[in-house]
Length: 345
Ligand SMILES: C[S@@+](CC[C@H](N)C(=O)[O-])C[C@H]1O[C@@H](n2cnc3c(N)ncnc32)[C@H](O)[C@@H]1O
Image 1 (spheres, helix red, strand yellow):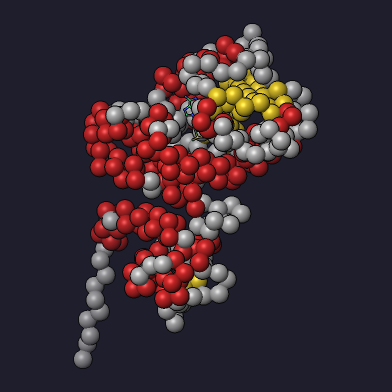
Image 2 (cartoon, helix red, strand yellow):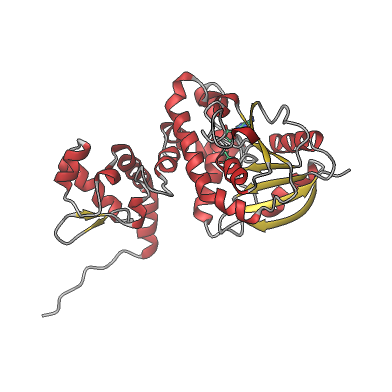
């Protein structure tokens, strides 16, 4: 007797079905991060019932959540039905040294779910959709009382992702001979603090929106170990930036509309002395091993701020349009590039 083996679906069918439902995947990551499942699971495997008690969830529903995540190697299910950590699930722990809990929450905040259905409209017009939905521009909204929790998640997510990149930037950016630098839109100051720690003679200004610098890295604030060499300045870099530094760093800020990018770079060119270095650090959509992540972020930026992740040629052109002299573009690590330019005489 011959038995017919079930016919597997063609890979293209499986792929598209999975893709169309991939919001469930993002939602599952968010649910695990919100519930704190990764923190509840230690080094020993545990069953869903035990974990459910720890995070105050329904045991059956939690098991289904963990199984869905295990399909993507976030947690792993053992033959006896218990779950254990994987490298990816450990990153969701609050205490993970290079954790991504807040980055995961940020990428799945409620406003993102409100925006995604409008992607076709944004693609039609080439413009952001946030203002029409929320009545105000994204970053203005983020600093309203209504968005307080989202703003906290954002600042922590930026700091978390900066932990990943600050060390790499400190390794490739040679600041010997630089007296003063400004980190434009430097978030809570993780990168600046790392650079100040590496260069004991360096003075640095953290420039960001007032509410963000008010909550700067404790090392930079009054009483902090680096406070004597750090200045915290709140403002809008599209209006003006601090004057007179030898080096200006702009990391992951020139991701809005091109006009704001050129205006910000022109403000730097106006405020910096001739010969000052201007260093722009960005993830590019071309030449990156993280194409899926960067292109997805590119679409998110289109929706929320009418912005983009750049190509190497596109960002080079904007740097030059702002009147800066582009000297070199080099890799910082596998996912970040550094555009080094100087302010002409
Ligand atoms: C994607 S985060 C990057 C933060 C930091 N450079 C890093 O890489 O971690 C963008 C930052 O730009 C700041 N920002 C947004 N609009 C700004 C503006 N008009 N002027 C100054 N900072 C601004 C935000 O508050 C946020 O800290």
